[in-house]
Amino acid sequence: MNLRHIFILPALLAAMACSDDSPVTPDTPDTPEGPDITNSVEKLVSIDAGQTFQTIAGFGASDCWSPAFVGKSWTSHRAGITELLFSSEIVGGKPKGIGLSQWRVNLGGGSAAQGEASGIEDKSRRAESYLMDDLTYDWTRCEGQRYFMDRAKELGCNNFVLFSNTPPVQYTYNGKGFSARGGLSNLKPEHYGDFAGYMADVAARYTGEGYHISHISQVTRHKSHLSPVKEPQYNWDSGQEGSGWTNDEVAALARELDMSLDDRGLSTDILLGESGDWEYLYKVKGDANRSNIFSAFFTPGSSAYVGDLAHVKNLICGHSYWTDGTWDGMRNVRKQVAQAAGQYNLDVWQSEWSMLGDNYSSSEFVGYEQASEMDIAFYMSKVIHNDLTVAGVSSWSYWTSMDVSRWGHKNRFLLISLVPAGGEYGDIEQEGSYQATATLWVLGNYSRFIRPGYRRIALDLNESRTFFGSAWLSPEGDKVVAVYTNMSDKAVRLGETHVGWSNEAKSIATYTTTGSKNLVEGTVAAGKQVILEAKSVTTVVYSLK
Image (tube, rainbow, N blue to C red):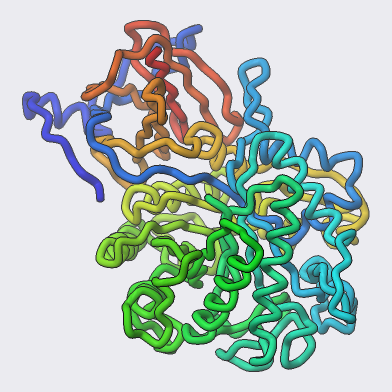
């Protein structure tokens, strides 16, 4: 997926320009035109607007689990928190937020109403449901989640993906939101239609209230989407809501959901996949009945074939967990995702990632104990970049938008760090304080500027695991956006070549995130080079008109 241009330049110049060993610029102080370039190297970059790839559907995050409590109880801080997530406004040269363009909404299973009887010890991992024990609906529930949906829409994000971790507890074998059935679904056979009807009813309710429910994610996540099952390869037998599913069980639910959506006249699509990692999509991994998903769902004649359903489009999603331990390893897996998706003519979304597990190479990551927030944010940028440019995904979502950072987890699993009134181990319902993390702002280098409808274009550079970038063209052709990650201790001066642009840039703005800067705005004077600071993620916005 990484296409390269051939530069017709002298070999010596190319070698000097693309090497970290190239001569550094003499001492030069900061100027109004840009940062200090005392210790810098020039790198050649070509951006070709004539070579186009995928069109972005959006960047998002989910409302698992804390927004349910924050939206309801954190009345002094919730507005500020939502601005960080959804605002696209720039005030005084700094974005107020990261402008998420998708929001994944958990259709909880009802364990919250069960309290301690749910068997889920941590109440922050229990979720509400609209379904009552008498099988009627209480639409006053999920108040906190609905607050975030309201604010998302108000601030410009109106693309919601509904996903489900578990069927409602009224429909499960054990009456719980977690499963005791191993790799089999916890949904009773007689309730497939009921569960499908419930999901469609919620989507219809939200649609009637003016929310754009693009998808129901079948094991979660434009257009209106519903994701009915999440990470079906895992057994989910404790700790939080969840259930295993076989491919045939997912397909059976998808067929019921397709009919339920039709019955309610909804245009919402079913988002299949939500695989626990990328490899489950394209090969047999572990249980054959829960993997090789491309083939199972989209091969005519397969027992799990759903490619003929009206609400199943040529779209599937997966999660970036577990296959991100090394630069070369993550690229190899994502190349296989792109190749396999191409065989089935499928668009691919990445619907969930955080820095999970302990499979990270010590030569590429300093380790959790030593890592700074920015180290973790840099690693996320590696994953985003390779998902976009190698796997070719058209949507990218983070996992938990906010949570309490406990047990030394720092910002591995969250964008916004919450501290309840009683401290990090206090009651999540007791309003405390919050803090945006480096992870939020680095995600904003992508989400705030690469908007739905932007198309990836060719960017050629001497890419490495410490220096990489991608470029995007606006639907109107009036903006080019490039996002660069420079993890080295040298600033980079870009030696740029522009191909296929409608005009040269009338103005150039930069937005830089470092350990001490959060999307700080800068401008590039006419005739000056774009400067990427050392240890930074920088978005460059070229306005062509």
